[in-house]
Image (tube, rainbow, N blue to C red; front, top):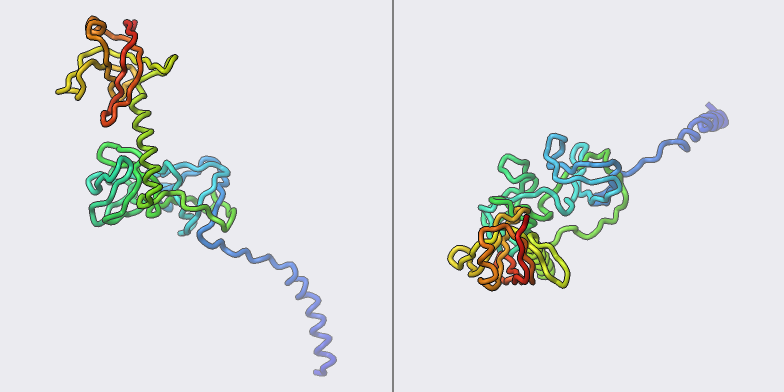
Length: 280
């Protein structure tokens, strides 16, 4: 075949091949981990594993952003947001502060619920420290940490950015983080103590319940206390006042008013009574 004929054949074929190449679908690279993803549906469960059968650790809503750190099958692994359901059994830790605990066993499971049959979402080792969100009897509800993650279906998260925010969990070994956690714990304790009181005018508070004597032997306080509070508060309300003024109301349901004092080291508030009346 002559060179002139070969050139003619090549040009003829190029007429069909080049347009196909020009219209080929672009190749979209897979996102590199970690990345920030945006939730694309309403009420999306963050699961304890790569299946809808696993417990929900929390719920994300359309537009929420999650940091994606990996993928298995059709599920993305994500950093857990504050408030996620994470529990550690108290038998294997010791308290270092009101809101900080340290692992005392070789390996301790982080579970999705406060029971030993719940899914394991992470594991801690001896010496690891973590922040406590709430004490649940024999279990600690803990704040999110690096060693626990959740799972979201791939079709419910869309890529937003390769830029990711700083870790959303604090490190208990960081002094500033521990100070902040301690302050939050103190504020929560104070709020719990004052839960049975209603703020009224002039910086005073009101509380109601059945008036009873309080003794140092039984209550760690010598004076009076309110029992049977209608809100069912766990923290008692102690009362200080003139016995001649208060003794006549013992055993009666009353409403008292006075100035409140948050006693250091005591799991209660003391109300210095300025007014008392029967509660109908």
